[in-house]
Image (tube, rainbow, N blue to C red; front, top):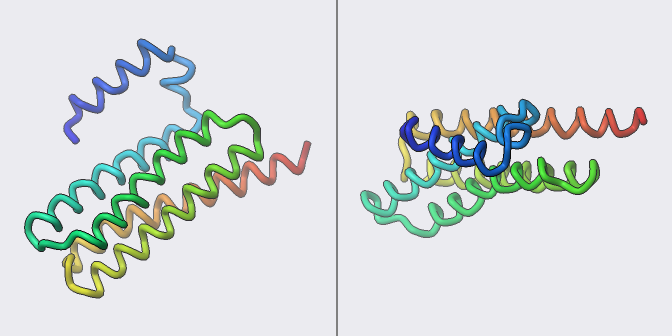
Length: 144
C-alpha cells in the first residue's frame, strides 16, 4: 500500500478519534505490522487467483491473515485486561493458521521459496510480538 493511503487513514483516525486513540504508542508496532501483513496477504491472494488459478488455500490464508490485525484492533479497545488477552490470543491463533496456509502453499509449489521466506518471516515476527505482549500483560495482571 502506498504511503499516501496509509497517511490518509492515519489522518482520518486522528480527526475522528483524537490523538490519544489514533497515535497511541500502546500497540502501535503490532497494529502497523499486522495491517502491513494483511495487505501482503490480500495481494498474494490476488496473485494466486490471477496467475496460478488457486482459490481455496489463498482464500483461507486471506481469512486468517486479515483476521490477525482485526483482532489486534479489537484487543486494544477491549473491555478489560482478560478481554485484551483473549482477543490477542485469538489473533495469535489466526497467525498460526496463516503460517499453516503459507507452509502448504510453499509445499505444494504455489509460491516460490523467496516468496515464502519473505512473507513467512513477517508471520513469525507477528507471532513473536503478539506472544510477547500476551505474556507481559499476563505477568502484569498477576502482580496486581
